[in-house]
Amino acid sequence: MTTAADFDKKYNIVDEKPPRHSLLRGRFKRSFAYYTLRERLPVILTQVLDNLSRDKDDIAEQYGEEVREEIKEIVGNISKLKYQLQTDKALEPFTGNEPDKEMWNAFIAGLNADNDTFFRICWLHGECYMYRRLSSYFQSMIKMKDYDYFLKQKENALKCCTDALENVVNSTRDSVLSEEFFIRILKLNLWGNRCDLSISEGKEIKQTGNLFDSVDSLNSNILVDDTKQIWNCISEPIEGNSRIIDFVQDNSGFEMFTDLLVAEYLIDKNLATKIRFHVKAIPWFISDVTPNDFLWTLDYLRNHPTSTVLRSVGEKWYKLLQDGKFEIAPQEWFWTSPYEFYRMKEINEKLYNKLAESHIVIFKGDLNYRKLIGDFTWDFTENFKTCLRGFQPTNVCTLRTVKADLICGLKEGTADNLDKIKPDWMVTGEFGVLQFSSST
Image 1 (tube, rainbow, N blue to C red):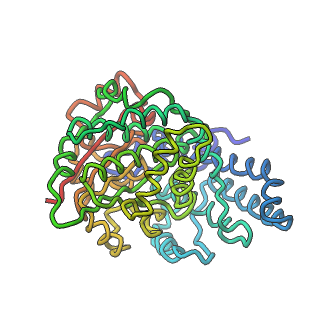
Image 2 (image 1 turned 60 degrees about the vertical axis):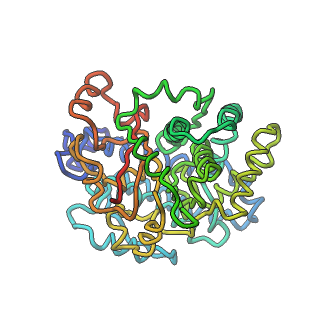
């Protein structure tokens, strides 16, 4: 069995942190990138393999006995991917018929030959590639083309927290149009981002209690708080007859539930006339929202087996969708590409222009944050707008609990103090940021 020391020596792993103003890469051992590639991602692939083995009879009952051959082929491909990841192989081009094949292959073809392997490529690119490659094995099948191998985990993430869902619904029914209430519900949405199955390696994260009532107690854990600027932007009078606000979503389950609570508030208080939700086209980072997850969540709530509270709010949100006040944005493969958002105008100008129609785009979660500022070791005090590198289709804000070792916009000395009292502060999800960049 290859030890960590053997691996590091064979693949030229450097026992250092990534240098200042450089890309985060797995070749730097003192980085979360190394830990993710070496430990977390192989576990996630193993779980998919285990789940396919466990559920093969149920899958055969659903799709027919001939699907067992597809499962065998998929299992073999995932095992190969796990081996390639664990032995730092180069990224391979895609050969299927997926709509994003050319975009991905152009990206892979443009890699430097010295930096085209899992541990040498930018961590963001390598991690996205793994999830995209995993999806390709299913998309190449006939029967299992649309099979969501993370579905049960995502659905359980909502089913396990009925009491917490009821509590936050009850606490937000008597909402008022005020800066104070808006900021509290936005912070609820921020802390909902802690429920991330990719960070927990697929293990269930159960939200309990009433997070809405406890958000104030977490204020000391907010490292950048631009909520006043966000409120000032959103509360500007609507010019004309419409105002679109876009949510670029992250996790399903409890976090998506809090996305919908914020969206409901924006519509109810006439702060927006339409909320567009941007979701992922394929299963992504375990718990990211897909169109099916969005619709399933509304159906689950409006038909909840025990809770009249959840049935009521589910019906309301379903009607908002039917009336066009909530909208699932058209499928965009850019969200599951390797590209950072500053490349969007070049790679997908149509999507960039679509976002420009919006009054503000709310980016949720750690992965979107990584794509906003890149997997790059910015100075901790660097200005958020600077780190966006020109990505400013409209007003932009980000709600993110910190689960990766990159961040910007901190006050001088904040990172040094956290390093002393909480050395792993950048990867636990205990701390958060609400950052804003104005288009003016």
